[in-house]
Structures are given as structure tokens and as C-alpha cells.
Length: 171
Image (cartoon, rainbow, N blue to C red):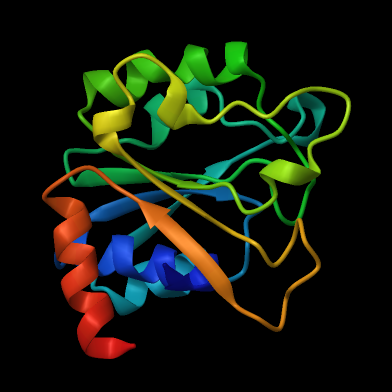
């Protein structure tokens, strides 16, 4: 349990990011992603998500942004600020790129309950992704509890234990 999904993002990055590691960040994105990456010693790398494609991460945009220093990718759908969503098929399309480059996925799903016109699909639920995904969410958006700051993080071991250690000594 975290102090909102934002603390979960911070914990995931603090426990996985080493100096100079690149973290792919969808653009446009929630305002805190790039600064948190930088505070953790990482390098935020913008991945352009185009309006005409529904602001989704495409396999080609991901592949183009990856370098030997790329360690992880933030996936945040439904997206703040665009409202863009990724369908199961669109998520499945980027999996080969993620797996080929052995990337960790930090999946911010705080708006999952506010998906309309379709059903939310978590990247962590797709084959081979549970063991490489940190899933973050909370209660503030879906249940109008923004002042309560109650979130949660689900992560594979030993990453979950490392996140818990940082949480215990900072919160």
C-alpha cells in the first residue's frame, strides 16, 4: 500500500534506476514522470504519442527510442493528460519490442476504472508480462478519494521486497 500511485511510481524508479539508465516516457505524459526519473539518476526519454494514432505507444515509436542504456518503459493508460487508451491488441503489438529488449514495464493504471467504450486491459495480464511489470494504481480517481492518497503497487519478487524496504524507511 502506497501514498497514492505517485509514491508507487517513485518506489519503482528508485529501486530499478541506476545512474544514466534510460526510462521511456510516453509524450504527452503525466507531469511527474520525467522529474521522478531524473531524481532517481535516470534519463527520461520521450516517446512521441501522436494524436492521429490515439496517443498510443506504437511498436515503431518504442523501437526507435530504445538504446543500449534503456532499462524500462512507463505505460500509462488510460493516459493523463490525453485520455488515450490502449486496447488489448495494441498492447500485444508492443510486447515483442519490450521482450526483445528485456525492458521492465512500469504500468500506471490509476485511471483504469474510468475506461469507457471498452474494457481496460492490464499489460500485466498478458502472457509473459507479469514477471516484468510493476502495476500501480489506487483509489483516488475511481472512487473520488483524491485527498486520501491511498495507492498500491504490485511487483514481482525481489523487486517488490526492494520497493517495500524503501517505502518502510521513507513513509
